[in-house]
Image (cartoon, rainbow, N blue to C red; front, side, top):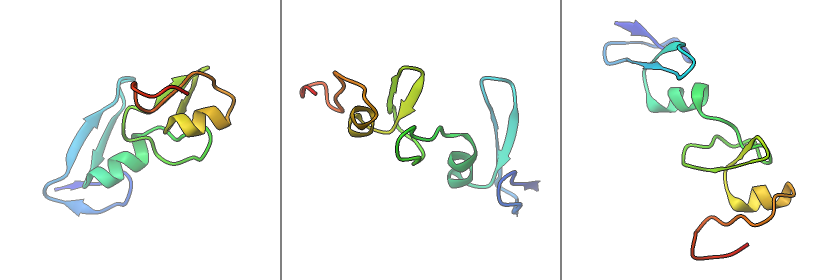
Length: 82
């Protein structure tokens, strides 16, 4: 069994994740993996588990948060304009 790096649960179905920087983690759930590895929105601080929006070196969960932070010309759906 392996121990989750986030919650400490000793679980027989834990999995490992290797980040692009080479660090390895062990998790017992996707929830714990998201908590540890997903970036936070630069505006509202929610975890970005989808594509999000990158602008000016920051990550945002959606176009709304990016626009509130001063980013222009962004939209969540390519068929809409900001």
